[in-house]
Length: 246
Image (cartoon, rainbow, N blue to C red; front, side, top):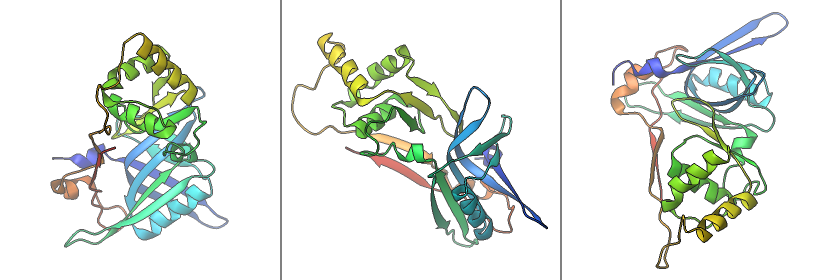
């Protein structure tokens, strides 16, 4: 895949101290943000690549609730912060014949709450993909809803009809915000069952979900193109693909 690096964004962080100013620019391969009516952007996910020192500095800045500037191809720069309670996950990418680099994924506290069993009374769910089956699966897992994959299109139509889904700002992903509680979703399901718009499977057995997501997927041939040197270390991309069966 030629010129894949052109799809990367850039995160810039400036830290001013008494006698010095430190400016860090790192490549961003995934980003999810929510822009409010006043034009302020709340970051929900940042995935970036760089050297150990620079990535460590961004880690500390996220914990300190500092602000960053994120530039995405074809979009105006936005100033963001992940806010209080953000979580960071850091790893090392080793590629034969190349110097290892550091990979950092930082998520907002609100995004972390979308995991199953977390904040079951929540009203907002941040998702990194707008695929109808993926949306239904994640909502059902968070709230413990009795659903089957065949209901995905119906659920997508209900979300749209109720104005309960809206797109978010994303880099290399199609994030959405789903609004609603477990109680409201159960009401939708009950009404649709009575109206025979949806129905349960005739036989008993496990519900199987087959979701092939590629949130961090790139081919090996992209490694040279996607990550130009900015910190003195080589910058290959992450390779990971999720297969979900429930």
